[in-house]
Length: 296
Image (cartoon, rainbow, N blue to C red):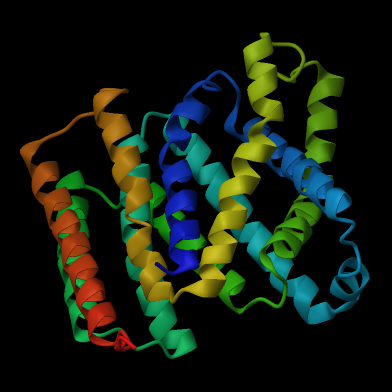
């Protein structure tokens, strides 16, 4: 199997279990959690760079206007996505956040066609169409415009597009993004400390530790995602992403007891059917184009 697919499975699998992590920080404001994600992510990737002694890219990246602007834009999209997700999870909207990540693959397919000239095969289009029906049905059953879901879908869709076409490798790109976010995050955290409102160091040891380890929890799946984004098409990446919201949805229903109805079962069944169609089509296409091997 393509190495990029394994990176994608790893990234989306970890993201699927994120609601449990953020729920442990339920008493900490979403903006403070976001600032810790930003700050500690740079510490983590900086440690990796130091271990590898990999600094030669820094000066060219910071002096290239196009590269810098690209990663400023991707960093802003990432911050918006992170904040929306953390707030949604801790406000008991895990099911709606999962809906956002079910919508996102459809956004990825459209962006791949519009900006990268990708042409999905007929079977892939069928899978996307079935998934679109499922997502549309879920949105209709939700009874209102799902702003949390739409914000998550479009912010991460455009983030994936930027990373797909960006000049830097995964570690370098994430380092530049977290460097862009670091100073605003650090400034906000220092302000909270000066006002005596910070959770870090003033809460129980578990909360303080989880805030510090937010950098590792954030950076590892992002690095895997960036590796996947550079190795597979946006269409494939979009279908793989159904893994994360499926896990999130199950966590919301079975662990945090969010409402589950027969209407939701119908909608999610359509989306899972789309996954089966896509997987079967991919396997058939792989076998069809697999080179023949002859015995000597």
